[in-house]
Length: 104
Image (tube, rainbow, N blue to C red; front, side, top):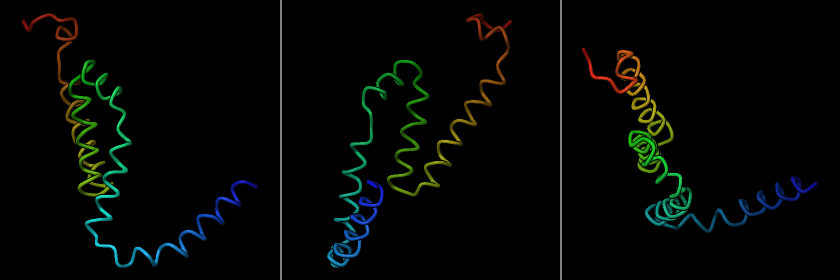
């Protein structure tokens, strides 16, 4: 029942408040979206990623920046490109490199 009430509230909000945003400049709407997205970053998890593997934070930030300044597809392509590059690098290593030994 709560889903029905929430759906009606969202529908009412969209019908009533959407015309009010018609005259709002695109820059203001973009700033609102970017400000809302800044709250999505978990800083503790980002610091943990930095400490565990620096490359993981590069993938995370590239996806985030791609989504914020591009689109969802751009963010996914950036993250996928970095991850596939990391997988290629990981698979091309010799077994001796995994144990901290130098190449022969």
